[in-house]
Image (tube, rainbow, N blue to C red; front, side):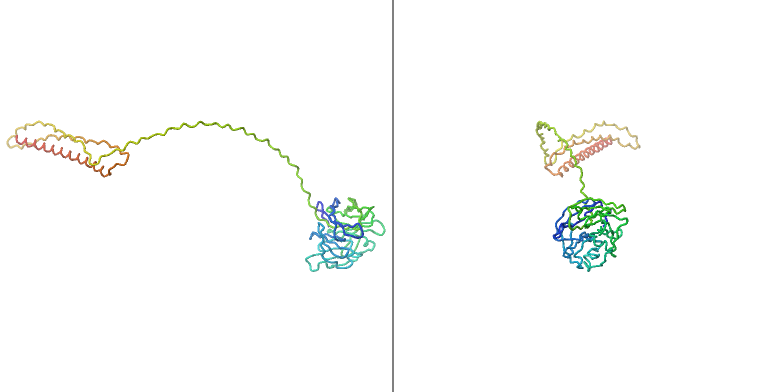
Length: 391
């Protein structure tokens, strides 16, 4: 099949250098043509085809068994060919669920859908013609662009050339314009590459099996690209997309910075702090307030001022005597403000009620003194008035 979009692909190839024995499995990189041996199989296979949907290969053994092969060379027998003639198959390819196989002068189509009830059943058989071509097309590949099979036919007379085969009618015809190929006994391998060219291998060209690249653009250019020792049988199929090469990054140059030198740290010893002697606080002793009433000093009574005796004027007969003139009352002495007593430092020994009682007692004393002075003034006034009447 054509994988034009791919940059490269890998085809698997089976080959045997003798008429008997098992086949050797190789991988062939296209378009370079580099071949690598994978393993020696436990079967002699031919008519190899690649199923892209299943990502696996199918081949037919010399005993008529249908063998499935993976990319690493592991093989599995999945059944027997549906027709005895297929045991001599020489060419094969796969498209979708159909396996196209050439054996003798006919094209066989086999169902290879593993989920189908008709797996490995024969779908159709077509007779190849004209006879001058069919006996020498040893391999082909399916071209999805036109639905035809492309291979190289070796004719009885003349040079080998590229031909197409209609898988439904069996009709074989050469390309136009013709694309002649180098002489050889047969082209046992044919596969499309990622560039749309046909890659065909001549089994034995002067003791070498030579891989050619064939342009199908009408130019007819045929280019040999690689060679291996000649083989008795060769068949190839593919081509699956090759894994992209690993990305090699340039080495990263890591510049190691110079080590940072830290200068030594100078430690300054601080002299010990002078210990301040503890401050001794002397608490004064509590003021002791004596129990009982506080005796206040006796205050001297004010001495009343001497009032000169006034001789009243004679009162004429029949006249009303004037009221007696009373001396002005003596001025009351200003009350003495007691000195404030500082609050005790500690709780006093006696209850608060006693202090209140002392204050009330002092006030009562002041009131008594004031009343006594008032009575003396009134009494003195009365005495003076009485004396005046007697005179």
